[in-house]
Amino acid sequence: MQTLEEILKKRILNFGPISISDFILESNLNYNYGYFNNNLPFGEKKDYLTAPEISQMFGELIAIWSIDCWKKMGKPNQFNLIELGPGSGYLMKDFFRVIKINKEFLNKCKNIYLFEISPLLKKIQKKNLSKIDQKILKKIKWINNFNKIPEIPFILIANEFFDALPIKQIELTNIGWRERMINYDKNKKKFFISYSKNPTVLENFLPKDDECNRIGSIYEIPYNMISFLNDLFYKIKKIKSACLIIDYAKFKIFGNSLKSIKKHKIISPFKKIGSSDLSTHVNFNLIKKISNQFNLVTHGPINQKNFLINLGIMYRAKTLFKNANNNQKKNLEKGLDFLINEKKMGKIFNVISISNKNINKLTGF
Ligand SMILES: C[S@@+](CC[C@H](N)C(=O)[O-])C[C@H]1O[C@@H](n2cnc3c(N)ncnc32)[C@H](O)[C@@H]1O
View 1 (tube, protein in one colour):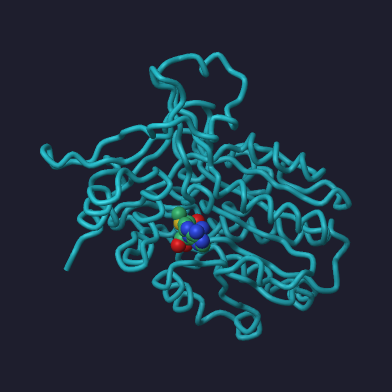
View 2 (cartoon, rainbow, N blue to C red):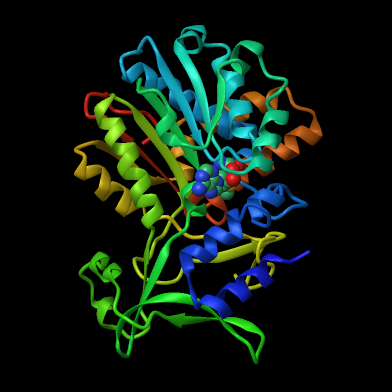
């Protein structure tokens, strides 16, 4: 059996260097060998932990945020819930426990769309959600084409979705801005970074900044996120909807944020291709800029710590703590710390909400 490393090596040697975006796409999503199609990434014994894997409180609070959002939308008689990249399905599992109690919200929620591209993760989500309330289960539909969702108002949640999408990178070299490519050295038997021969239109995306004149500066263009958001924001504007995006934030405008994670450690993107997770940091200022082009309302970005505290994570933790045994108490404390500690997820994860301008101010910000 071939490995993804061999496939990419042959492709480069036969057809020339590939872009960073193709490399991310192949590593994460190659149909046969891609990371998300062959691995369950989440867990202490797996590769990394996401917020819903860490604590039930995360999904519960997102549900509270969504109910508030629906009220501020004017309680539409029919609306859809959408989650992008639901991972193992845990966020929704905890989310459903909360919305089950709010009958009005639940009755008016027409469908719940889970946007997932990986057949393996889709299977895992189906299994993890199989025991939920039958009334809710019937509303769930798995999709891999965002444009198939009927156009009624929606609330969309995306936790750690945009950081998994392919991006492009450009670098200022001695001969000008060039696209960063992945190449393969036959003699040294290793992958390395090379540059496009010709200038690239990607240069048009560069912001006005002194860094633009420094040889070696790298600028990232999340072209996939940009086109996804253009579609999404067009719909938010057209059908009075809202979204909540939570992700690993990019704090520096310039620099290479591509990283590969295996067993909770950052490793070289060229090691364990297809069996480690490739991701990049998300440019929240860019999200805000695109939303402004659609004349939408932006809440945030703020950090995850403040967002969860504003939504009442301390009160929720106290309530759960009261009825917990010693082991559960330990897990609760650990989970809370992981989510809001500024040295863990609290500061590096940011939250932004984009809503139609006819929706009142949303909670949590
Ligand atoms: C980092 S995981 C996050 C999982 C989950 N949201 C969580 O917080 O635990 C990324 C998710 O997005 C999915 N995904 C990645 N690229 C995608 C794409 N292009 N289209 C649809 N889903 C994608 C993955 O299969 C996975 O479910």
